[in-house]
Image (cartoon, rainbow, N blue to C red; front, side, top):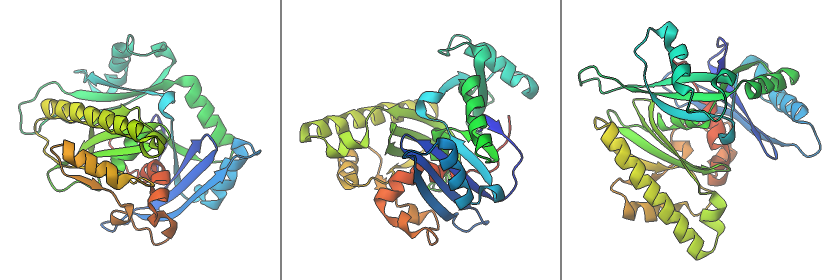
Length: 316
């Protein structure tokens, strides 16, 4: 999935993620059946420096010119929509999708850059209509992001979205023949994904932020847990109805700086699925980035690492 992409240069990816107070970066290399190896992870604050200069400095530190480079859009910079897949030849797909998006976007479809992600149907069932996720972002925003990286002398290969970064991590957690629900919390709130055979089948945003969940008063924390549980119940029930061929093995809670054990216990008592807390050290080789063994650092770099786990995908 990429709103903008070029041919790959290497087996490793660098992700550079723009944040309110700085730029975060990570470099990950995949080597066959071995655990993906995190080569580096770093954060450079903006302070009084320009975004371009901070990007350029971080890119040099991570040797971006020797790797493929990706970046993530923020949650307010794109729309992720689920549509019925048009019954058209592949070369007509995006044109047909544009027609369907006319009344679904909050801006004119002619001003949109779009990409599509197939949601595979049940392979054992008779052929029938299925769905696709469509990512749409304003042309102007995509052009500005490309220009920013170009000014910083960074060879940007892909612009991606957080749902796909989280999908990349979730795919590492799937038991054979079963799906996984993964729930993370970051600066943009909660994100729930369901994956099966490495494919994204469900994505939901949850308007709860870590500070509300972990630092608020007891009543606020309880209300947040209730809201999260209700959204999980609704979303997982919906997934079961729409994709009955997927058996979920577990709900995995992404690393939290603190309070993760309390949330896990609450969710386990209110959901039918087993609930686990993810330690990225179990699915990634962190030997070259030992600071990422700390839960707080894993939470901080979660989506950045997920973006750097990108691998070749079929282009629709």
